Amino acid sequence: MHLITQIHKTLLPHAVFDLHFSPRDQSQFAIATSAASVSLYRLEYSSPKAPSSIVHLTTIPVHEDPSIPALYLSWLPPPPLLAGDKRVKHSHGRDHSPSQLSTDGFAVSFSDGRVSIFHTNPPSHDFSKESMTEIVLPGEPIEVWFTTFHYGRSLSGEEHLTLFSGDDFGGLRVHEFAGDGDEGSRMLWDDGQFPAQTMEVTVGRKHYGAGVTAILPLFTEGGETVLLTGSYDEYLRVYKFTGRGSVLAEERLGGGVWRLKIIREVEDEILALEWPSRTGRSRSYLVLASCMHAGGRIVRVTCSLGSEGDAPRVGSWSIETLAQFTEHESMNYASDIWRGREEGETQGDPLLCVSSSFYDKRVCIWKAKV
Image 1: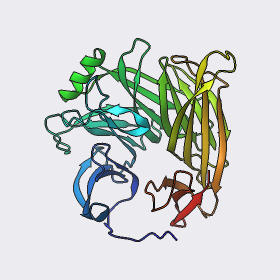
Image 2: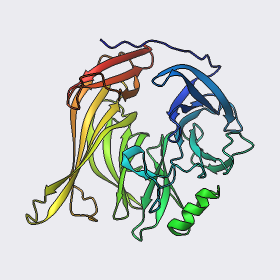
Image 3: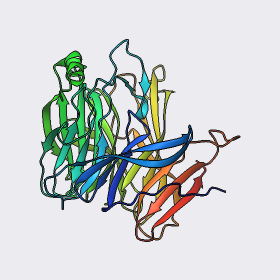
Image 4: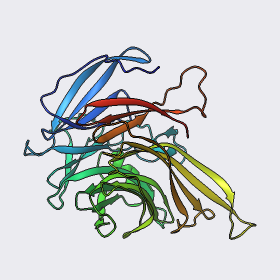
């Protein structure tokens, strides 16, 4: 039997809209609050595997109007590695530099349509309003529900940083930042300067029937970035961004797709059916979806690719629901997977999931065999 036990509680004078751990320090996390602020905390450990308390580090005002809620927060990922650097694995298996010289920070979105990036200025990593630099990205006056960073390469091979955001009008906002080539971009990061914005565009309003509430960048190939997106129009979509947007696949999940979490990613070589003598590739993603009034879903998203360098094609994607959890009595806004394993457990054992719901204040633990 799996039980949840409260170890420590911190009382706050405001609501918490979002929480994320730092990709550079897994004992540190940040919250976005209803009081237009971001607070940083650290977990203190009584033993290597047992956190015992939550320690407040700092609170940063992130909007001049304290009545404007901060809705979502996304940490700035470490910069990608250059050849010869020591390798550290982060989300989706990308290699990033562990260098403490590189710029740290986060993006935060608001209910008035603004998205702001706050970043440190190395060698200082002081997270205070006075020490950080703010980049304001204004938008239409409507809630921005989600924002996330992604590193990709253009057709010419240059690395760039993209910030994707989803608003309540069904818009996918895209801001691209780049230096002068890979070396130039890396030098900007290490010098504490943020790369210059090179593109700003909003796409997707003809593709979404409601607000865009979740965005997972999957990969960039042939200069095209493929995203997995959720909307409270109840659809999970595979979306391709190339300066414009197009839907590669979609599946209705029965409830608003509020949050998405990648559980596993697998890439295999397959025999290309069109050219039997040619080896193709297949990518599949196991994804946990928080689907508001419909509860939790576990889905498999699969892409049959061509040979190395081929761009993703319409019709090469499939979305399949493998499991669902419907015991919540109100909106399922957050879910996650327990990554630890008990003694004797193997890769093929059921997934241990934790999900929560809003009005009934429930946290549920459930298993799914996939």
